[in-house]
Each structure stands twice: as structure tokens, then as C-alpha cells.
Length: 453
Image 1 (cartoon, helix red, strand yellow):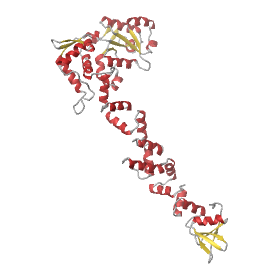
Image 2 (cartoon, helix red, strand yellow; image 1 turned 90 degrees about the vertical axis):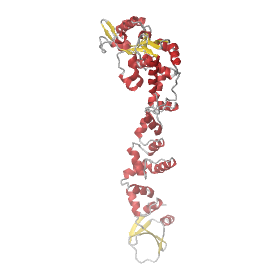
Image 3 (tube, rainbow, N blue to C red; image 1 turned 90 degrees about the horizontal axis):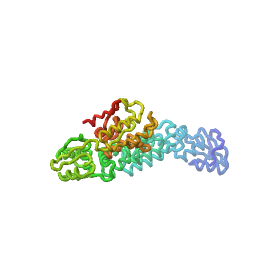
Image 4 (tube, rainbow, N blue to C red; image 1 turned 180 degrees about the vertical axis):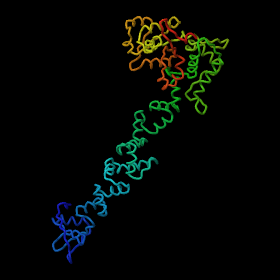
């Protein structure tokens, strides 16, 4: 209805009998529009609006409104009185519903309300409340859109849609959600359960859950035992590791071997005292141990079993395969690990190992070593002495070497402590030093204490 372009005339009125009082704003405005009326009187002493129609004066109680346009907008937007309407208008609030929410929430500034409205928390609060009810979710407790907006803002969400999407997956903090997503987690339940169990990444957590594994420690132990093999009999793999760690030339009774294996197997027990369901046992009777020590290819390579005496004698180290940390050896001269890299160091090491009886010798180095050595002319000579491997692309030589030690139980010539690897890999922390041979290259040759035992 067209009430915007009316002329308002202030007036007072005394003793008129030809007055008709209209009961509502809609009818009053329709009369104005229908009869093309342009002037509206504002009768100050009667607090009403009035229009002249034929011989009558049609009036409408003013009810505190300044003009008909305000009166009509208040009615259409749910306001029951002028005081609320003009207070809302000052705050740029157009509907009584929003004004009521603002008052109920204790919001005192327009900027905050506009933010709540713009970020869709007014409508979103109803959706969120219903979702909580449908899914029996108790926390967090927010009694109105303002409290929900405040909670979400404090937890770094930018709008309701972002908050609600995260909330449906169990997250109530955007930073936590982003960290979880980066690690592959989509739901807060998975993320929190994984954290409690010691897992960092979803892929590992999912693999563990699928295998019925309860903790990251158990997952790592299983993975280490099975490393490098498609089908693993776990107690056999554990026994081979034990044998690898016994000093060369030492004789060990069958009973001692059984005791060592039993003690090692106990480290795999769950808190309830049981072995994990996946741990396979094949060595139960004395005959099982004897057969394994006599016939298993890796056990035979490590030592000789005397069935009559029931003891196992560890062979000399030179019967094992041996890896050389190419970069580490090339840089180590006279105990100085910062000296210029030299291929002559590697040639000296290979000749020393051959003299000690080693046959299966492999050098592994990063591709960059070729560009660092000061005696490149010795490459052909080095390749005649031993197998020289460059670590695969995107894999450091250290990673490749340590992987070979874990899977093949090869010896490793290196002075590297591998400290950073031990921090992240419990198997290396517990075992790598048993396979590592340290050295010193001097003008007189190579000194390697482990081979002198």
C-alpha cells in the first residue's frame, strides 16, 4: 500500500461529531489508497491520525507511531507496540522475532546481532538444536543463537555452516578438526579413539582396527615382526632376531634358547596376560625347536645346531650379508666424520671386509655422493670391488639401509647413531645397535672392534 508519499499535517481537533474511528492500520491505509488521499492529519490532542472523507473525519489511534509507514511496518513485522519497534529500528532490526531474540540473548550492540544473522546462527540454532535432540547429544549446552554463536566463535568457526558440518562429525573446535583432517580422520570419535590408542594417522588406525589390534604399540610390534615377509610365523621370526643378537662363536643350550624366546614373547602379551589373537606359535616342543634350528635356512646361516649336545653355536659374523653406509664411510677418515668424501675409504673398507672373510658385501649411498667425492676417478675401481647401489628415488640411503637391516637382518657398517630414526621406530631403538659395526679408518687401515671379539 502506498503510504510513503503522504503529506502529514499537525493539527488539533475540538468538538466534532462526524468522526469515524478505524480499528486497524490495514483498513485505514486501504481507504487512503482507494480514494487517492494525499494529506493525513496528525491530531496532537487526540493522539491519532485522521483523514477527511466526504463529510466525515476518519481516525486511527496513533499508538506512539510517528507515521503510517512505521505503523504498517510494525504490524507486518510482528511488533505489538511502538516502543519496541523504534528501539529495533535504531538497531537496524526489522522483525519482532529477531528483536525478541536479541533482547532474550542479552545482545546490546547491532554489530554482534548482524554478525549472528549474517553467519546464519538465527536459523541455524533451530537446526542444531533438533540435530542434538535426534542424536541424543548433550554437549555443548547453548540456550539461544547468541550463545551458540559465541561458542562457535571461541572455537574458531567462521559461520554456522562451517560449525554445523564439523559438529555433525563430532568436532566442536575448528583447529582440532583441521589437524584431524590433515591426518586422515573424518570423525572426532575416530580421532579421539586413535589418540587414546597412540595412533597419529587414520590409515594406521584403520589397519589396526581391521586387524583387531588395540594399540599403536601392538600395531608397531606386529608390523616390525612381519616386515619384509608376506607370511610370517611370529615366534620363528622372533627367535631369528634373538639369534642374530647373540655374540659370534657363542654356544647356547636349547633350554636357554627356549627361555630367551619365552621372555621375548611375554613382551607381546596384552594387559590381560594373553597373546594377541594374530600372534602365531609353531615352536612348542623341544623337537619343534630342533627341527627349526636344523632346517630353517636363516637359522642354518646364523649357526650350527648340535642335536646330541642340544646346543646352538653362533657362526662368525663373516658368514652373514653385510651392508656399507656409503656416505658415512666415505666421509670418515681418521675418525673425522666431516672430512672430504673419498671413494678410497670405501675401497679400503671393502678390502678389509673381504680379508675378514665377508663375501656378500653391498654398498648403499645417496645419489648425491657421486658429486661430493674428491676422487671420482675411483668409481670404476670401487664397482669392481663390490656391489654399489644408489638408494631409490625419494628414499634416503639411511632409510633404505635400515629397511634392509629390519627385513634381512643384515650387518651394517656405519658410525651413524641413527638417533632420529630410533626416536620414531621402537624396533630400531631396541635392535639396530646389535647389527651395526662401527669403525675407524686410519693411515694403517681399518679398525673394527666388533670383529675382534
